[in-house]
Amino acid sequence: MNSPVWQGLMQQALVGTQRMDALDDAQWPSAVQALMRDANATLPLADDAHAGSIKVLRAAGAAALWQRAGHVPAAIDPPLALSAAPDDVQTMPSDEAVIRALNAALRDGPESLIRQSWHVLARAGMRLPQQTLPTALDAGARNSALRADLLGVLGACGLWLAQLNPAWKYAAGTDQQADAEQLWSEGSFEQRVAVLRSERESDPRAARERFEAAIKELNAKERLAMLEVLSAKLSMDDEPLLERLLTDRSGDVKQLAAELLSTLPESAHSQRVIAWITLLLKRDGDGGNWTIEPPEKENADWPRDGIAIKVNGFFKGGERAWWLYQLVRMTPPAWWLAHLGMTPEALFVWAGKTEWKRSLWDGLLEAAARAPSREWLGLLTSMQENRLALQSLNSLLTAMPLSEREAYWSTRVKAAPRLVIVLIRIGELMEPGEQLSPQLSAQIVAALSQQALAADSASANWSVRHDMSQALASAALWLDPAALPELLAVIDKVSSADANQNNIDEQWQHVRRIADIRQTLARASVAASS
Image (cartoon, rainbow, N blue to C red; front, side, top):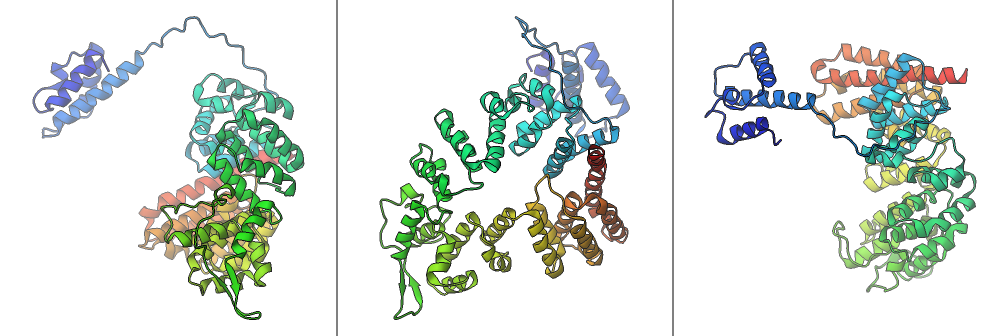
């Protein structure tokens, strides 16, 4: 920017393009003048008020191209002492179509498709092509959600390359083929989290002890991330550690520890909260109706157990309503059902008749999201329009194995008034390593063929068209690959009858692109299994 070319252009822009000629008055090198003459000859300027502005912008483009072409990187003195990239035991895909599909997924997304493509590679025991590594590492630098999946397909060369760019340091660990102990002691933080997650699944006690031994060397952000891993397979064996973390230096770690303890009804934390909430409940007469009144004053012991005393700015209600909501959200949901002798449906009817309906409903739904139970499935399904109820339902469904989720979704495909909403919800809860069964995939395609999709695509309501596009993209992402040709046939039928073709065609192409990529990647899966 300090060259005479840029100084002249900046002066030109400041004084106004109508007052002088940018090309003639700037101190241009001959090469830039030649570029400008060629540009103006190819694209003649109109003789109007905008001609000067266009000329300055063209000059800026020519100057930028000239500067980049002539850039000479500064010499590194002394040169970096780099070892050669290690040999990779993982192979790269040899099918050019698969490589193009991997690159297309990485370039255009969506995120779920990128992660799926890397899962396909990992299952096949393969790594990303070398020319793809910089783009993939950049994607991981921008989006931390991609990192765990990326580490499995970087290969030794990718891990070596990550050491050369500070932006890629998240992946600068040891070889993924190393054993767990080496990954834990020498790997990147993402690799250490992956070790802890894997160990938590196979040996919860060993994972807890590993985390406990490392706590002192971890910063607050790292402690929080590893504590989140321990939320899987939580048990009373974890209570002593969680109780100690209630006094952690980090407020986020303390809050998470309290929330995890609240999912253990027998924990000392849950028993303390239950004792506080019990004091607020009264029963009329001999076995009459239950009533509840919020606390009259704060309790100094609440903050240690994750119960905030100061009203949060987002909360719509007074101080007493806030305290009640805080206590309810920390009370195990199963306790309410046992203590009041009610089903979840009856509990919500009772809460809805009280003066404190909002505090009770919101608190119960938040607690149900942390401690998912199939007993709540019917109620949460009926309340999906409620944001917190939907979060609780998603938490419950996520905790189910895929086969049980599919049984639930199968009933929703039959019963839901708008199939597109069901498909969107399905897509929100699928994991990259999953895909729907052939049976449910066939059911969804058959249902789609009977839906009024053409009416949705031609709707003047942008939201309706957007939902339809999102639903079909979800189907393209998660259906069994064998069902994708039938899905594309449904899309072709609808798009050919689309009266709003110009507005929706880009969305149809987006869905087709996802389906094409998944069909191509399925070949890699078949090749790996054969």
